[in-house]
Image (cartoon, rainbow, N blue to C red; front, side):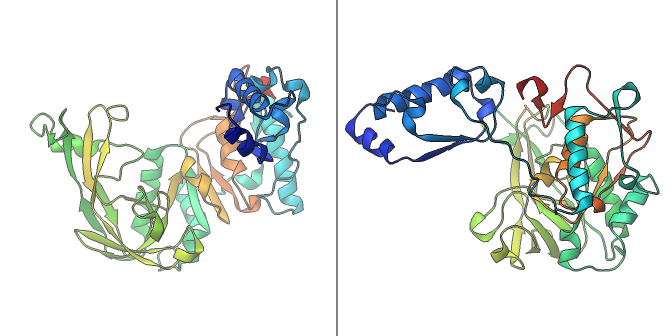
Length: 361
C-alpha cells in the first residue's frame, strides 16, 4: 500500500476487513498489514483503527505481537445441523472426537450403533441408500442421497455396482487418449500401449471407458459455462447419450438453473506429470457417475442421506472420520460401512481437528 492522500482517503472509508485463512499466513505478513494501515491512516493503533475480522485463530497469529490486543469470539452453534436433541448430541460427540475426549482402549473412539449398517458390506450400504434404484427415480431422489468414500478407486467400484442395478441399456463411451510432447502436440502413441493410457486414473479425469445409462446422475468435472450453471461439481441427470454429445438436465447448484437442459460435448483434458507419470491428454465427456463421490467433492453438497464407505481397513484416522461426520445436515440418516472393528485410531501425539493441530488452539 502506497503512502499517498488517495490511498489514505480510500482506506479511511474502510470500516471492516474480513481476512479468511489466517492460519495460513505468516505472522510477519500480519504485522506488515497492521503497520501499513497505521502508516497510511496515521493512527498508531492496531490496523489503524480498522476492524479486522479473522475467520480462524491459529499458532501463527497467536505467536504474533498483536495477539494481546485481539479479542477472540467463539462459534458455539452448528448452523448446519437441525437443532433437534439427536443432532445436538451428535454435535457434542463430534467435538469430543476432535478434542480426543472419552477415548476407549488403545485410544480408539467407538462409533454409535446407529451409524453402522445392519449389513456391514458395500452391497448392504448401497441397498440402504438407493432403495428401489431398479426403477426410474425423480431428481430429488438423487439430490437427497449420496455415498461418500475416501478413495477414488472405491468410488468407481461403488458407482459401477449401483449402475448395474439401474434400469435401461448401458452404453460405453470410449475416450481418445494421447501423450503430450514438449511442444504441446499429442504424440507418443508408439511408446505407450493404448491399454496403458486407458488404465491411467486421476481425480480430475473421467474414466477412459465411461459407462452410462439414461436417467442416471453424473457430476461435471470442469467449468464449461458458469453463466449457464455448468460448473465443476454440478450434478445432472443424463437424458440422451450419443457418441459426440450428452444431453443432461441440471439438478444442483443455483436454483435458477435447476431443470435446464444442457449439452455436454467431448473435450480435451490434460493432466500434468505431477498427477500422472506421463503428460496425458484424454478426449472424453467431462463427467463421472455421481451415485458415490469422494469426501472432498461432498463439501459443496448438502443431502438428507449421507452414507459412508470406509473400505477394507481395520481402523480409520480420526480426522477422516471427523470430516465424514462433520458435513452432515441430518445425522440420524447417516450410516457407515466398515470392514473390520468399528473404531477410529487417534493419531499418536497429535490431536487433529480438520487438519488444525491441537497446540494452535
